[in-house]
Amino acid sequence: MTIRTDFEQDAKAVFKAMTDPEFLTDRNLALGEISSEYEVSEGGDRTTLTAVREVRRELPGVLAKLFDPVSVMDITENWQAQGDGWTGEWYLQVREQPVTVTGQFQLVPSETGCS
Image (cartoon, rainbow, N blue to C red; front, top):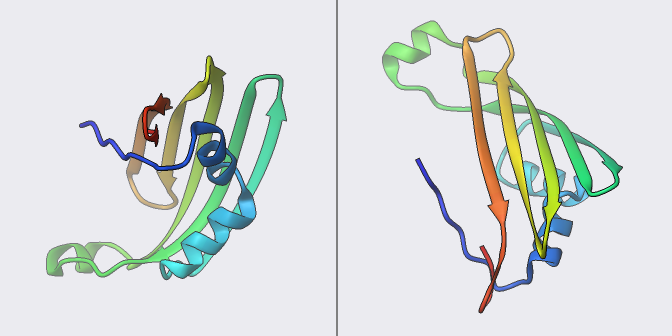
């Protein structure tokens, strides 16, 4: 599956927001998450975010009987500078549930900002 989002801001501005713990925490809490904590480490052209997010989700009937609607997720994002943009990997593990999600991403300049 591929998801694409276009931003009016340049890649550097979007990268700055997407690696800003305060911005990310405020965004997540505004979306209704119970809690959201981020740590950022930087080294050379690499930036790593680690997050713990607690969320409440409404589950369909059958799933509601099997899973707690409150989940704690451990997330790691590894950003690597590449030219005028960034590439990276994303990992999500839901605690106490057999759920793991991984992905790759890129943030590249475009004529109207970045995507």
